Amino acid sequence: MIRTLADRSMVDKALGSSRALLYKHSPLCWQSALALRQVRRFVELHPDTPVYVVDVVAQADLSDLIARRLQVGHASPQAILVQGGTATWSASHLGIRAKALSLALGGQ
Image 1 (cartoon, helix red, strand yellow):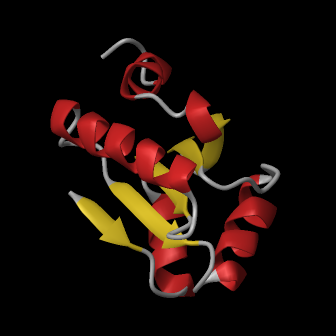
Image 2: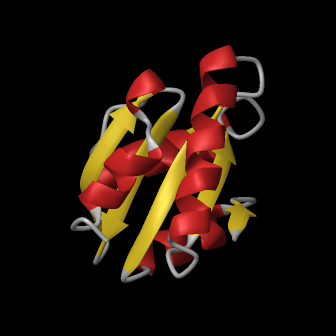
């Protein structure tokens, strides 16, 4: 299931998860559209991993908060795997692939 990050409390919840995928999406970017398809494929393969999406245009403040808290430079599109409150893997643009995300989880 993909959830949209709407406020700081949702960011806190996502970052407090034992495992979650954060996806920074721009509705204005064709590469974001391609990356979103890969994120959806990942969700099909790993329905037990919470996925949170932030719209970097409408919610730039939340996107910046995520970058600061995880100490991962901002990109869009961008996928960040969080485990135990720490960013353990990230990719941007065409590097966002369902297979790469699965491998980042340990090949699951």
